Image 1 (tube, rainbow, N blue to C red):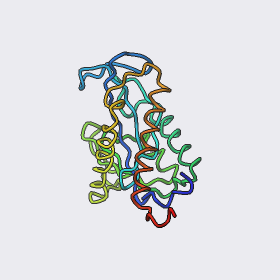
Image 2: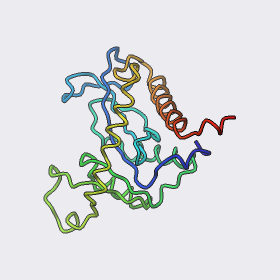
Image 3: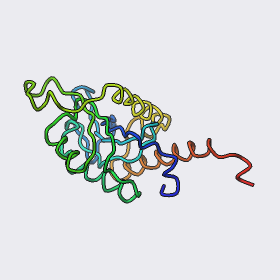
Length: 195
């Protein structure tokens, strides 16, 4: 990845969680009422073109996106750091499910500009929340991570989780990120460069 960082668009990054139905049970599986099924919840980070950069350790499905978010986001930042990507100054889009004082504080500490709409289910609007940064036009770029999730659905092994071991599931996810990235790079390569 280090030699292909120029193929990433880090002008903005997208954070999102996704639940995957689990048919055989196993590690990090829990019942998710909205899906009416046992699921695994995974938090993903994509670049501004929808290329998945990494994901955090999967969690049991009954937990929402804020569960253990500080630890999981530290994992994501550590992975980016290993790949030579500096998180300082990144614009990060996330949906209202990530709107919490704790997560905003983590982003501020890492000098990440968090672009998160206010969650109406949270406390009543206060003076501090009314002046929080939010860019509506930038937020519209979030659709790329939804598209990235659709790209992953082309891998039948990822639509439904059959693996009982979480490390096997995580490796399949990372393999899908890699395959999609290689396809993206290959589209940009001029055939004459291969001679």
